[in-house]
Length: 373
Image (cartoon, rainbow, N blue to C red; front, side, top):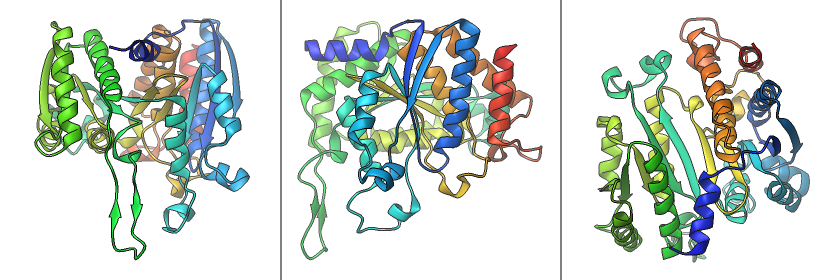
C-alpha cells in the first residue's frame, strides 16, 4: 500500500479532536440554504454545550455560483474549503439547467469539480432505521427493523470522470469511458476494511466482474488486499445481485464498497430502507477537507417555503463532529435529539403522516432547544 493511500485513509478516519472548529458553509441551491441554516444552528448549539469555539464562513456553489460568477465551483470557494477543517454542504441543482440539454455549464459540474479538487475519493453513507419511521418504508417491518450498514462509494474515478467522453457530430451516438487505476481501487478498499474493523467485521465488494474489465481489476485487487485483514469476512457480489439483496435482506450487510456509478444507484436504493430520503446524511472524505451533506437533492419546488426536512443535514453535522473532529459524544447527542424530535412528532410534512406538520425552522429550533437542556 502506498504512502499516499495510507495518509488518505488516516485523513478519512482519524480526526483532529480540536476544540476549535473552523468550517466552510456552502448552502448551494434550492432548499440548501434553509436546511443548512438549521444544521448550522444545531452546530452552534453543540459548540455552546461542550465549550467549543466555532468559526465559519459562507461560500457559493452550484447554480447560484453560475449565476453570480459564471462557474459552479469558483476558486474562492475552493480556497475557503482548503483552509477549513470541514465543509457543511447543502444541495445543488436548478430546473433552468436541468431542463436545458444544451447548457454548457451545469451546477452538477461544480459538485464533481469539488470532489476532484478536494480529493474526496470516498462517499460514506450510513443506512440505519428509526423506530418511528419503519412503517414508512415500502419494505416489510421485519426486513428493515434493525438494519444498520454503511455504503462506501468511490467518488473520483469511473465513468463520471473517464475520458474520452462525448457525442458524435451528428448527435446520434454518445460515449462514456469507465477508467480505474490500482491506486484508486486500493485506497477505497483499505478504507472499507478500516471501517469494517470498527463495526461488524464484514466487507461486501460489489462489482460486475463477469462483464466489465474495470470490475475485474476491482476484484483482483480486493482478493490481494483481503488477506491483510484476516479478522474481517469478505464477500464478492455482482451489482445486480446486490441490488436485490438490499431489498430482500438488508440486515445481511455491514460495509458495502463499490465503484462510482454502482454506488450512486445502490445508495439511493438503500435510502428507502429508512422510510425517507430526507433522513440520510453522508460524509465525503479523502485527501484534503471532508464534506458533509444530505444525500437528497435541491428540491426546488419546496425552496423558500420552509417545509423541507432538515434532519438529513442535521445528521450530516453529527457525522462532521465525529469524522472531522473526533467528537463522538457531540455526534451522539445530535442523533439523540433527532430521534427525540421524531418520537415527539416534531417533523416536516414528508414524514408527518396525519399528524401536524412542522416547518423546517420549527424542527431545527426544537432540536436546538433539546440540545441546550
